[in-house]
Image 1 (cartoon, rainbow, N blue to C red):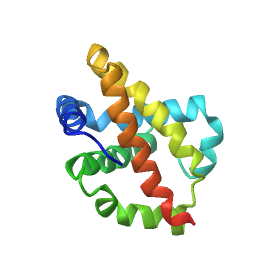
Image 2 (spheres, one colour):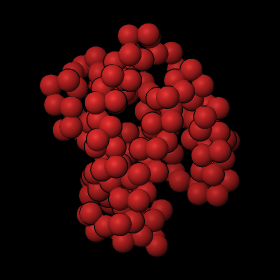
Image 3 (tube, rainbow, N blue to C red):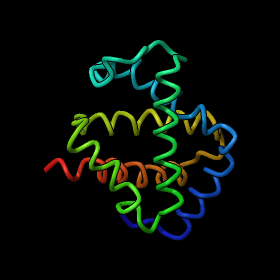
Length: 142
């Protein structure tokens, strides 16, 4: 993945503005995922999947923590997410298409939070980032 310096600055700037909302962003994205792509629920049989549940909120925080870590390490995303990649490849075995679904839901969540700041440039920068994160999390499946 090659983010330009402008894209990196844009991501870091907008992400830092969302810091007060970080604890809720992941849960919002997961709630959207389970509503729009209900087939994704099969990977969470032990979760209470009702919107706003503690399970969704807690797992959403894990999602945001991974994104936050990637943003803090834009020049070494693969390295910083290596353990998470191992977990997905060897234990969780989530169908890789679900990362694409979650990426779409994260885009909607970011757009609803950032509003006008989530313009075409922001969308493209985040799309590069989120697609690369999904790629890293599934590359060890092979």
